[in-house]
Amino acid sequence: MALNDTHRVELSSWVESAQTPGSDFPIQNLPFGVFKRTGRIESPRVGAAIGDQIVDVSACLDEGLLAPDAHTAAERCRFSQLNELMALGPEPISALRRALSELLRGDSAAYRRDPGIARRVLVPMYEAELRLPATIGDYTDFYASIDHARNVGSMFRPNDPLLPNYKYVPIGYHGRASSIVLTGTQVRRPAGQIRDDPEQPPAVAPSRRLDYELELGIFVGTPNALGSPVPIIDADRHIFGCCLVNDWSARDIQSWEYQPLGPFLSKSFATTISPWVVTLEALEPFRAPAYVRPDDDPAPLPYLLWDADQRRGGLDIRLEVHLRTATMRQRSQDPVRVSRSRFTSMYWTIAQLLAHHTSNGCNLRSGDLLASGTISGAEPDSRGSLIERTWRGRDPLHLPNGETRTFLVDGDEVIMRAYCERPGFARIGFGDCRGMIVPAL
Image (cartoon, rainbow, N blue to C red; front, side):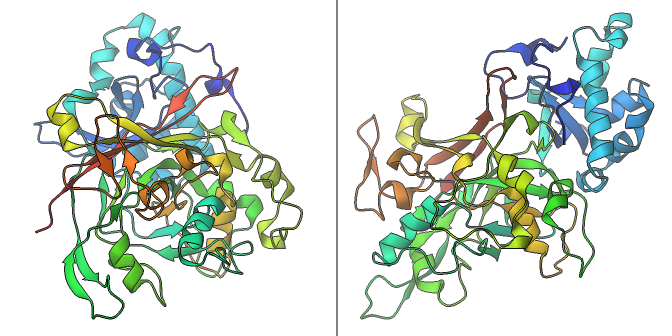
């Protein structure tokens, strides 16, 4: 996918809030999501975010404001989820994004003729209810950060933290799609089997080691047929875009149940995602080289190796985790940042993840969600989970208000944010991915 007119840094919009410094949604972004107006009896539909507004794509189509080559994709925006739009593939989606960009620009001929289109096609975000962006049929969680794998592995296997397959295989497991929830949904502390004393049998109790995991979500666009692997050179054409993911984890339940088949109830109770899907086209200016492997690491096997993906298969996304405790809310204190990392540190690219997932003939469907796994870097403050930040609870996290944390307590709110910025291009962001822990039943 190439840079085009929608990426120009000098573009501005007649939507004034799109020019707000630090806005996640300038005109160069235009992520897609699903919304309905609060309090109205109407079906949800697809919109695009700009500033603090939502562009109602169906209304733009009804008003005759979109170029003809965008109509196919715009018609798919009448549905109550993004799946039908995602399935179209890159070219029709790019045409729709370009048409929206042309409509929303400060020099838009349509707006100059009739400024009243603003009230007919825009919905303020505060008047909207956001929905899950897609019907997610399947959810796969990967383990693509070598720093995260090394950190966690060294806690349990100090002499051999990385398993022999890690540098050959993009490790993943099949997650639970039914418990994926939208940002802002409260997360109930899970209960499960816990065995603290190896000399005693397990007991069922609420998790005492509840954790977050900072991840990038990758939505599948064009599906592949059962039995037809997607070659890595085509993988990007099957990716619609990205969101943020908080893969909540109950570490004490996980440590007892994960052998021999991996996580189960320790993960399936909730996974939070952000509502806006940033298209792969919007992320194009922030391409980066793939992770540079040390000379003594094995090269990716041929089906995972493509020169272009090694040169520019990475994404320079900067990510942060913020924490706000119940005490901080009571004192009207702002959340405190507890982690910041970059997606360029990931051992595997998103194209490699998709190519590997389909390499056995597995069919991915439009709206399926792949998560990157915890995004951690080499430094302590770049670790994307509390089990790493506190080193399994050994080194408590000291908050500015005097509180400490080893793992999450009831009332804690976790807020994840991400953005891309690079000289010569506009800063774009993903919006918040947040959730608050409430007590177990």
